[in-house]
Image (cartoon, rainbow, N blue to C red; front, top):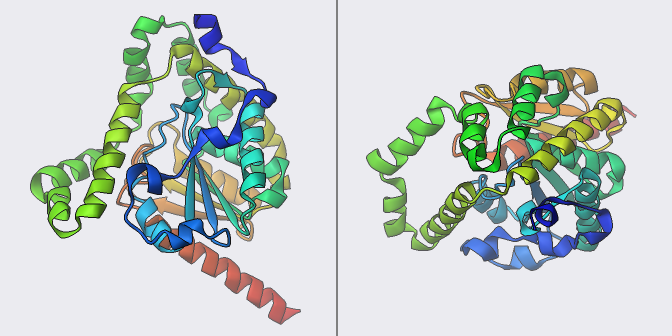
Length: 321
């Protein structure tokens, strides 16, 4: 049974639609459903990180949905077995074909950034723009992190949750993340006040938080993580050979206090490699690996400015010609 649970899926075994969900309907986000139903609305597809936690950017979805975006989240944990990176990329591309959106912003966080960039490289016509949040694309350049992954591969299942937190999990949080959570809950009582002023939105936050806690407390088996680390190594190798061929415009959102991946350094490396016309960077000051998409980042505003800058450059190029 354990071997069955941990086998790798081939591309043909993944059902693309069953692995995606709409956070609006799942968590009861109180918005006008018209933009969500309109196929002409731009689509944001989110690919989560190594542990498959899908609810971490839940504070970002209400402003983006109210701005007219449809949101779809890739849930790798919906399959009881690990997928190869080719299978994950293929599943994402199959979904994008079926969605047939006029504009698709593909967004990946950490490990998901490697998968998202790989998908954009394979079929750039399906991806209008690419947003990478603390991308794990520097894994191949981080011997200490690779050593941690090798150590975890030797840890028995019974000790894996504690070992993974000791080696990796503790590096994902920053002081501001914890302080902000304590202040919001105990001092300013933001959610409690929201229940009084906007009960429907508060209910969305309650449902999303409950889902996030459930995801964190019910981790997949160790062999699932072993497969994801193997995918990460393979994906980083492919990306290092292919960054210059990347066609969709790229925005990197990076926390400046990411102790796990040093994402601000990786953002600078990729920006230098691709150039300012193809790659933009937004830094979230003081944010660690797990806190970059919390309330300290207004992702709707960041994406809006990025799109406006790109439109201005296109306008300037047309005027110059």
